[in-house]
Image 1: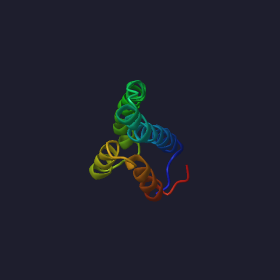
Image 2 (image 1 turned 90 degrees about the horizontal axis):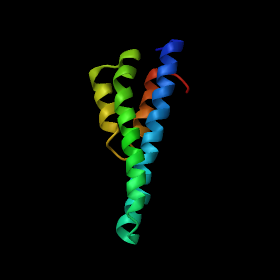
Image 3 (image 1 turned 90 degrees about the vertical axis):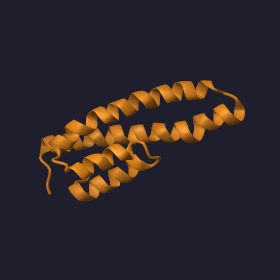
Image 4 (image 1 turned 180 degrees about the horizontal axis):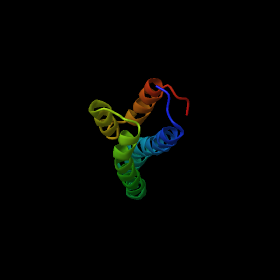
Length: 105
């Protein structure tokens, strides 16, 4: 399936948002949380958690218009939502999206 320029724009936007959100989740889990619980630096979770929360809300907010623009079915949209709460989920979803949309971002 070849994407129109408008669809490519939406796909690129969603890809960047999902990758940034995924990185923020990994930083929260593997850097900020150990700093809080192993080294008693709770401020790391405060700031990284806040940033991740904002990025998570942006991700969720963009899933539905992107799904509409790219004509995703229910299962793909559902997988995009589930991917946002799993470590490494956005990266797996991104790889799957690139394969299925046959477009190089």
